[in-house]
Image 1 (cartoon, rainbow, N blue to C red):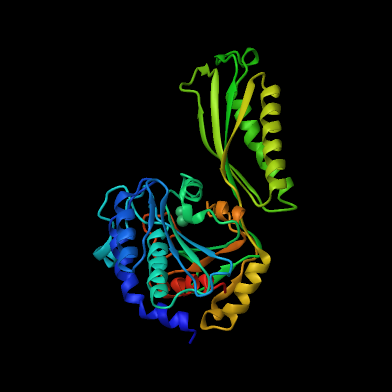
Image 2 (image 1 turned 45 degrees about the horizontal axis):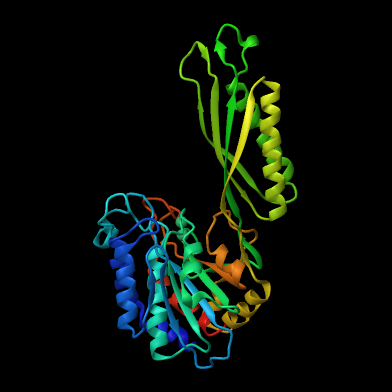
Length: 387
Ligand SMILES: [Zn+2]
Ligand SMILES: [Zn+2]
């Protein structure tokens, strides 16, 4: 067995303990005082001197056996979601003790895996220098940005970056990858339609934001159909506020929604198309439209030659049987994108399904197979060795 996998498996129950303690005390957002204190303490027990910045997470530098090699940045995210846990009696022993917060995206497993790697490296150092990164605020706070900016240990010219994400519905120990785009761009939009409004009995005199909104929804759908002929993309209207009674045409109305795209070109085409569709819908209904784009996360783009190197190494180990090439990128978004904008590297999905459970990440009843902790720790360890 690969020596890193041996090490990781020896730490399995140690990682389960830490995972469960982190799972029971989740924190949401950028400021995660208890989670940060926990991670810092474990790193110190492993013999490291972590660098800590409130709102920007924790890093630990580990000198490699050969300090001239390109360093590796290994990242785990730390934040939970504003969700009430509903995983039932089987998981009650370590269920969230905090109402309105749950590690429903599996970031508790990510932390436990990276702590496992930290402990294994304390016994057997990595081939080259490694920086462990525990990052807050992944879900909506763009925590990668302050983390990358504030840590002295991350001011590296050259490095590789690696992270994994557990997947609640894919087979346990499967390692799913892409060359190139792994996850797409995610953005939000908001359109405000304004018309004179007026008496419901005189629609011919009143610009009607509801008609404008209806036209926009249909036009957006047609646009997505046209553009997705060349590359998969999504535009979904998710919210509509218009009117408040039966006999008044409202003077204003608002739509909001999400777009997900896989390339910068498609993203620009979709945004321009939606802006045009809003303007046309307004013109045809004697209303005015303002279109606002709220930028989300950029795409997570894996480096092809890094992935090839990873595949060569993993195929020669017990982990090779889990390798699965994805047929298309995931439409989930992730701020690890900012790490891969700075350095080449990769993110992979690690399947963690428990048979009989179908809830995906973010659901209150999402559960993850803890036996994948050793697999995840081994992936980090091998990545830190430069694959
Ligand atoms: Zn998530
Ligand atoms: Zn996540």
